[in-house]
Image 1 (cartoon, rainbow over the protein chains, first blue to last red):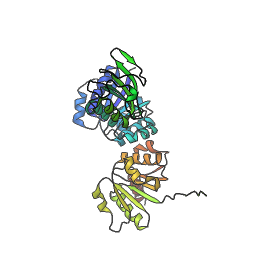
Image 2: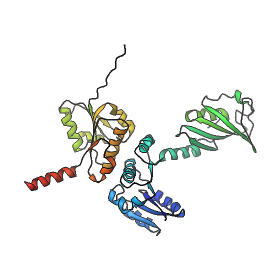
Image 3: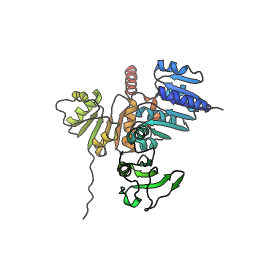
Image 4: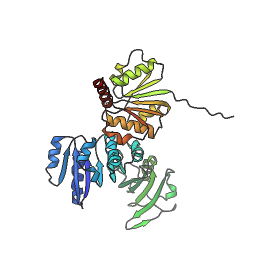
Length: 222
Length: 141
């Protein structure tokens, strides 16, 4: 039997998610509160579209959430998402509920209330923007540890002040380490007397508040 | 000698300064209870009477920082009466779950969502049910 996914409360996100879920062989239902948008969604015949207030139990019942394997709540209001996930969990015993969340402070609270997976949009989006827009000095950045720890790839160019220095000669902040140096095809695990050369890529592991200072120290720019 | 200082929670926090929130605030303040009213619209506070002796706070009560600013840890009673059921329920659950407020009273327009908040120590009042009971009583008389 096909797995059933219910997407709730956002036009664009639901539409693009629906396409990828259909490709993965899911049976997809979308619930949305705007009739015109629902008509557009319904143009794709393999999607089941339901028009109505997403947080009402009878609407959820109409969408057969009780048989759903996956409920993804995407509305723009945190309280609505929580209500939807709680109804699905407590009243309809849905196995897996996902919720997007605006306010990062409430992540833990959402998990406490029984939501299986909480995706904090603000965190996700700010991370991407930071990575792409703000730091010229960074090539790639991964955030981990609930957003407190960053792993960044920092390329060393010829004008960087750290070129030719040994690691112990560089004043790095305390909560930063250089975990690895990528030099051409080889990767080195650095020691205090390793010298930094032009063209090196440093893999920097740091707490978020110290990262900028460290990058400035290494490359001379942010 | 170290003495345990017992924190006395005494005040009432009201979320939502609509007609119900404002008139409750006025009456509780009249009874000399300490009251804070929170609303995200500053014009809402015009409904408070001139003799209202409590505090007001402008902000969104679904924001944990606003709740902290309202010193929710010190509240003995929380009354949640905004015009949105989902907001009311979420704020109530936050205050029970994260701040362990003793008494939480919430207005819920649509009683169909009981599943979500039952057995969590939240007291709910539904205008629909009250009206229904009252009208039934009038019919029987």
